[in-house]
Amino acid sequence: MDLSDKRVIVTGGAGFLGSFLCRGLRERGLSDDQVFIPRRADYDLTQEPSVIRMYDDAFGAEEADVVIHMAAEVGGIGANRENPGRFFFANMAMALHLIEHARLRGIGMPGSGGKFVQLGTICAYPKFTPVPFQEEELWNGYPEETNAPYGVAKKAAWQMLDAYKLQYDMCSSFVLPVNLYGPNDNFDLHSSHVIPALIRKCVEAKDAGADHIECWGTGSASREFLYVEDAAEGILRATEEMDEPTPINLGASHEITIKDLVELIVDLTGFEGEIRWDPTKPDGQPRRCLDTSRAKDLLGWKAGTQLREGLRATIDWWVEHGDAVVKAEAHGGA
Image 1 (cartoon, one colour):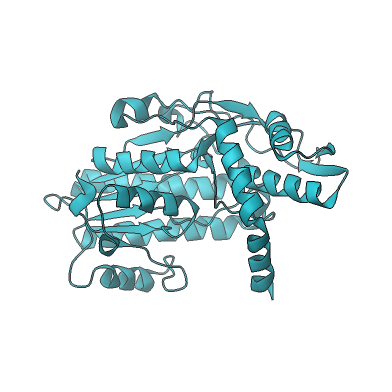
Image 2: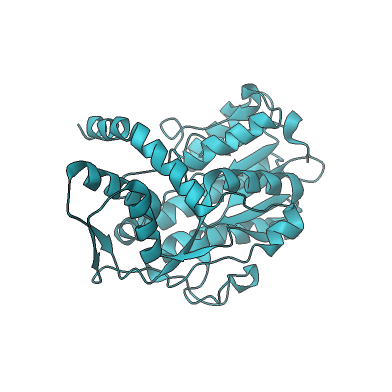
């Protein structure tokens, strides 16, 4: 698919990953008039009437050609434990309505020249998936309990696309990015993922002259992290290359324990205090590391940013913009 002449809806396009993906669309020749980003303040995509209105508003009398659905309600372990029902409902409802109304409008249907692109999540994999995770393992067990509702909802969206391919020959693609990080991430200490939370914690502790930081769990769990710019390019390649929702891992092919990650971030931020672990808090899934050979074979894609390089860029961004983010949080709280 040549995206340069397409009309594209990008849910979540104003967010962390979305900003990089939309930049990639512009680099492929799309104008701002060809990209529609539904804002959460204007469209509650968990509600069917709002989804219908969004499709109506996107390009006026013209229908969209491509929908890239990246919007999600998600957070770290703490947020997942506090909001399992909301996370399941919100993510399932968004995909359900967006996919069905794309079909009703002919988006991705035979002869349309378009498709529906769905982002999955690594949280969909079974808790004890053999490492490295291969896409064939997705149904071989139940996900890690703290993020299972979110993971199952995303996996159900994949099955919906698979069923629509079988019954309606609807064109789609489905990718599973591993944990993302990078500039402009969510750095909220309550809802963010591990890297931005650790960066903020270390920088603030350093600035305050604190003698220690506290970290959840034992540090023994391992994770793989993908730089946001690499992820955006992988999604765009899937949009261009795939016509069916074959699940495709997007990862960096590098595994690191949380303990080693914390020590690396401590080193890069210059924090000199003690690291205190709280083993009463959960570690989450024991290991996460992806087999990305399918992405290489089907998309011609491979991550290009090394972890240390990506962390340095992310830390530099927070050091430059962190004060403004904290002030915005305080204003929002007021």
